[in-house]
Length: 283
Image (cartoon, rainbow, N blue to C red; front, side):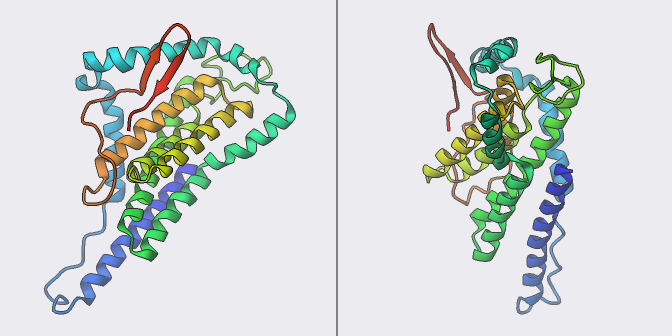
C-alpha cells in the first residue's frame, strides 16, 4: 500500500512537469506548427531500470573490490553479525516501560512512508510554485529513494522473516514468520535524509537536521519495541546507499549540490579500537 501511494504521487508529479513542458511548447511564438510536444517522461521505465541496477550490483565484480571489502565490507559484516548476536541483550538496556514505547511510537511516525511522501512531494510542489528547479529535483529524487527503499526492504523482510521484539518469546530469530529485518523506517528515512543532505550540502544545517531526524526515527523504533538494534543499523546503512545512488545517478550538475566521491563505497566506514566502535559516513 505504501509503495502504491508513492508511485501514484511520483507519477502525478512527473506528469505535472510534462504537462508544463507541453504548455510551454504550445504557447511559444512561432513554435505551434514546427515544434512537437515533448515526449511524456518514461518515469516507470527509468525507475525499474534503476531498481534492476541496484539488485544487479550485488553480483557485479567491481562492487567487491579488495580495497572496498577490507575497508568497508568486512568490518560492516562483522559489526552487523555482532549486533545480531547481541540483540536480545542490548534491548534489555532500555527500561521498556509503557511510556517509553508510547513516546517512541509517536516519534517513529515521522519516518512513516506517508509522512516522508508528504515531505518529499511537498518539496517538489513548493519548487513548482516558486519555479525553484533545485527544490523540484530534491523532491523528485526523494520520492525515487522512497520507492526503492520500500521495494528493497520488502524483499529482504520476506527473505529473512525475522521476529520482532514484541513477539512473546522475545527471541530475535530469523525465518520465523516475522518482518523485522531490516527496519523499513530506518531505511526509508535515511534514504530521504541522504538525498536532502547531498542536495543541500552547501547549507550545513540541512544535512545535520536530516541525519539527526533519521537517527531519532531509527532509535525510536528500538524504543517502541518494534525493532532490534541490528535492524536499524543495517536499515540505515542500506537507506544511505540508496539515497546516495539516486542522487549520484540523477542529480543535475548545473544545480547546487554536493559532489559524490568517485571511489566505490560498499558500506559506511567502520572503525574499531579497544574501547569504541564507530560508524561513520563521509560527505
